[in-house]
Structures are given as C-alpha cells and as structure tokens.
Length: 201
Image 1 (cartoon, helix red, strand yellow):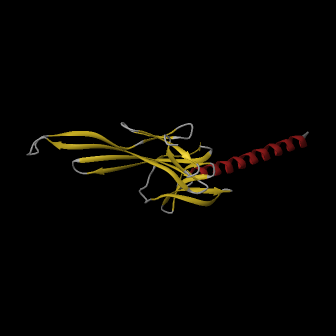
Image 2 (tube, helix red, strand yellow):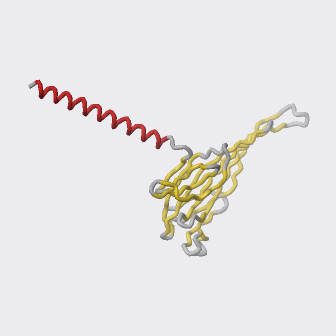
Image 3 (cartoon, helix red, strand yellow):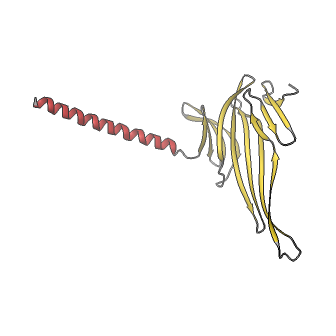
C-alpha cells in the first residue's frame, strides 16, 4: 500500500513540474513574437516593416527573408499608424494592398497645421511591381487672425483643406477614387500589369 502511495506522489510531482516547464516556454515564445521590432503588418508570407532606414514589404520564404520591396526611405521620426496589408483578387490576379497613415504638424506663433496623409499602394508581388498608388491629404488649420491694423483685436479661425482622392477597394477588385466633384473607377489589366480606366476597358 505504501509503495502505491509513493508512486502516486512521484507521478503527481513529475506531472506538475512538466506542466510548469511547458507553460513557461510557451509564454516566452508569445512575448518574442509580440515584441518583434519594426514589424507593422503581416499578410501571407509578407511583412510590412521598417528596416535599415526603409519602410518596406519583406517577402519571406520558409520563415526567412528572401526579398523585399522598398516602399520609401524613412528617418527615425517615421511613425505610421493604421498600417494594414491585405491580399485581394483583381481580374484573376492576386494583388496586395498596403495602407498607412502619416501625421505631421507645422506650428508657428500664429498658425498650426495638422496634416494627415492616408496612403494606399497596390503591389504585384511576383514582379515586385507597384501597380497603383493613392494619397489623400487633410490639413486642419488653426490660425490667429488680427481684426485691425494695430493688432489689438484678434480671433481664432479654423479651416480644413483636402487634397487628392479617397481610396476605396471594391469587393470585385476594382478601385474607386472619389472626392467632392469627381469619381474615378479603375480595373486591373493583367497584360499591362496596371490599373486602367474602367470605362475604357
């Protein structure tokens, strides 16, 4: 009877130690993945990241970097938000859309400009070709304006300036660009490997 109790205790202690070890190593792996430096977005075998002074799309093979597409050269101040990388089908071809937002502020004694640029770039990965790009800019301006020549009275004025088009990726793989006065629709042409005017296609 004593032997059975001893064996049961040894079995319980061993199982507990094994479970604890397993739990620790699993937690470490998750932390490493979460704190991967420079990685901003992932899709399939692609990673959008900042590396060696470039904002780039890294093409991985078997978990290792095989090639990359440079989106643009950047400095230490580069801090994009809302970075997304998604795949979609257009005219039977698989393409990837990279989107990100950049904000900057220009400030003087009398005026502050908060500029937001929403960027959208489409890539054909096999040839590393950029097949479409779009930037929409919104500038929120706050300005102190004097109401008389002697500058004794003033008021704060706000205005918003917009430039470029809003980018919309449609479910059928076509692209729509629109602003207050204009709307353009683009369809992917597999022969020229670029988006062309959908009305002419």
